Amino acid sequence: MHDASTRPLPFPALRRRGFLAATGLGALTLAGCGGGSDSDDGAGDGSPKKGGRLRAAFAGGGASETLDPHLANLFADVARAKALFDKLADYGADLSAVPRLAEKWEPNQALDRWRVTLREATFHDGRPVTAGDVLYSYRRIADPKQAFRAKASLEPIDLDASRATGARVIEFVLKRPTAEFPNVLAAFGAYIVPENATGFDEEPVGSGPFRFVSFTPGRSAVLRRYDDYWEGAPHLDEIEFVVANEESARVNALLGGQVEYAHELNPTTARAHEDEGRIEIVRLRGSAMQAFCMKTDRPPFDDERVRRAFFLIADRRELVDGALSGAGEIGNDLFGKGYEYYADGLPQREQDLDRARALLKQAGAEDLRVTLDTSAVAAGFTEAASIFRDQAKKAGVTVEVRMGSKDSYWSDILDNGALCCYRSGAMPIEAHLSQRLLTDSTTNATKWRHKDFDALYQQAQSTRDKTERAAVYERMQRRLYAEGGFLVWGFADWIIGTARNVKGVDTKAPANTLDWARFDTVWLA
Image (cartoon, rainbow, N blue to C red; front, top):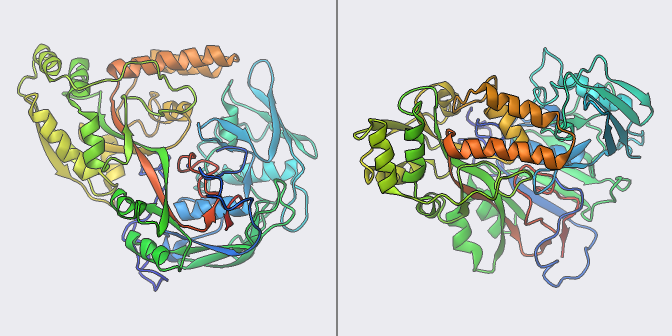
């Protein structure tokens, strides 16, 4: 990560950027078809009202910011991209793929060809969205000379063989059977742009709910309602995205009436203002997995008994209460609590220090010393490391906490060390498995490499029946629960603040899903 630009901004600059966590690289890793609604249906303010400009404050990226949707990497980038553009699919609150520009998708029997039919939609200049636009967009993303965000996600598609079979129909040819192909269509950054589109920062044309008005990198972007949006025109006249890098600046701007929406607040701020009545606090549950990552290919964690002991050392409630100030829920050593395919039938793991000590003794690790890498790169990391150090001491384990650089932490821990603090944002469980737990996964931080596990993943991907496929995913998760390298102790809330007159903000969509930072369904009461 690089520091945000120090050029003058409307609010003080934050010294780290709000990167998405869609990989272990700080990704809070970013679906639903219908519009969001707040929990009290407008708090008695009746039906949605038309008009007004909503100002939304996000941490930004300085002068390097862009409206090119295929380069969207920061939370602010993605919020602007989803207002201007559409994808073929997106992720619902349970991280299953739901149709967007794609009206429907149909696989062949072998699951290696998928026919996708587009809905009737238009770009902001009035042109219809066609199969040609889709193929151009995907081929642009896959350009080997570029580093677009969704490139790896589109890898299963043979784009040379894929073709348009009608104005609104595409036949996607895949390199291998892929039952979860809709997840590819919903991939982060896989936005559809007009064929041959360039110059996104001057006057971008998309098919999203808002159209371009102005953009100043590092400062603001103004977008106006697109009346012909395929899902219905937004309630707001305009949305303005403003850059406020410091969390305190976003909160103060919200309290002072300079903005109506403040993204990414910390738990302490939320607690201080939750019952005050001046602003509304929205908690997006289950947005960020919080874990300790044990590398299974090196001592001491190459011994399964040591990993099992560490599972039993952790007091998950103490970690959530202490490291997240209670703003989250406890984990059970598996990613994706509440998401589609999550193995929720496994017993909740509890701290058992006696059993942990017995396992360590069996492994010949009674006086174990281990270094835990952490950093201030993510909220709660340093606190979690200190709490776990004290928990481990009760089991006779000495944990030495080592602070790493915020700028290089995610790359440093990928291959180095044996134990580290880890975080991940929302993504389908299938994507978590494929990106982090297969032998050839590029972000395999636990170094979990088992050919029989890889074979189960391939079996799941080639299984047409969803119930049977879910059973294979459950087998994989049971294996990870028993002997994996992720000690998942919690799932953090993602916290947003709004003015009291802002209605329609979804309260159930984890960060990075469709209804997170979705402003076409929001109105000002």
